[in-house]
Length: 248
Image 1 (cartoon, rainbow, N blue to C red):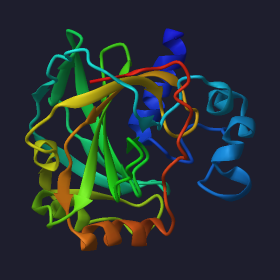
Image 2 (image 1 turned 30 degrees about the vertical axis):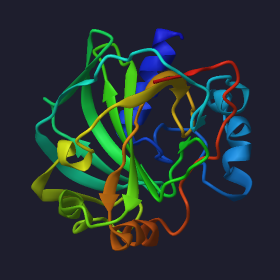
Image 3 (image 1 turned 90 degrees about the vertical axis):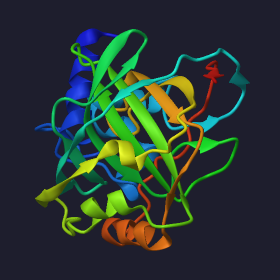
Image 4 (image 1 turned 45 degrees about the horizontal axis):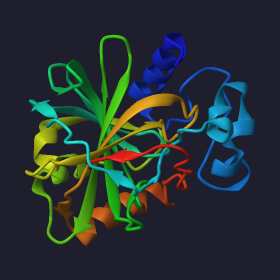
């Protein structure tokens, strides 16, 4: 992966993974119609990976290979201080200082956002909501921790953000009580790993995907609040696994 391209993609993701205005002159995209996923690759020259890439996300996680993955080193502080509606997702921007450690490298949490229904599936099973916790190292390389949410009981920490969820695309608000990302994840954090891409244009590859293998509880009302603001599903269709394997 060209480091300049990956760094550029990192800035896209950190500015708002899924925003339609991530760079001047870039084509707008959507989840349906003439600018929908099947057309992303032809909307702009920088989006070609969306159609030509061989390691695209999301995927159906299957064909697991036992590889004794080392635990992810989580070091999170309460830092979700800003919430925005970028027209494609609800995103919480995170203050500096929260990190994970993977492959002997440190990746800082920049933001987290959501997709309904889930983008990735696990052995064909879809979840009502998926959270993407986007991290970047000093060189702009990305690592995304994905969390699946299942409807069972309310998630109190999420309400800190949901109470201030912007209803209009482009709207941004400061959160009076910071959200703690750690409380949005299950306690047991075994995971699956695969090489993938951004799930929104420019669909740049070279992203470390770390999908937790246990879910977190959420209420039906919390899912409904998100989908009501989005007005439409915001999940990219599943992409071919091709020659990739999924480590566990």
